[in-house]
Length: 178
Image (cartoon, rainbow, N blue to C red):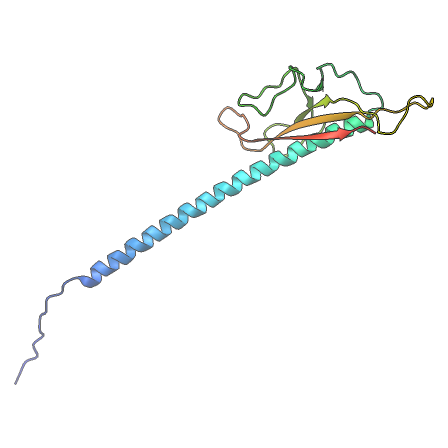
């Protein structure tokens, strides 16, 4: 009788090495996928914050335009209460590296939800014009047309450690009087 002998062959461990390589590849792929997801989430958060700031600044522009069209007699543009002459030195400057509020601004009259600060704006009176082809010699008074530059700043919802907004959007438009 012959007894069954099992042949002992040497195993070289190639299956283990291949499994470890696949495990390493899966780890690298999952790590890069996770980083990509986190980057996209951050970009989406920044985009949302910018959109909040944009909509807030747009609300400030509309409030200023409503003020200009609803106020029967506008006060003097003397550098107070957010009313300035064109390019006045003491007007707010929100677009430079060190933004300032100048002599003051007008605050948005309502509450905008989810923003770090409420929007604010200022109005500059530009030169008036007379429509072409009108004469003052005929005895009919000519109504001058006034133009105003409205500048508004809106803020996003994110804040830093000092509770300052992380994003701001500045919009400017030219508005024609009635």
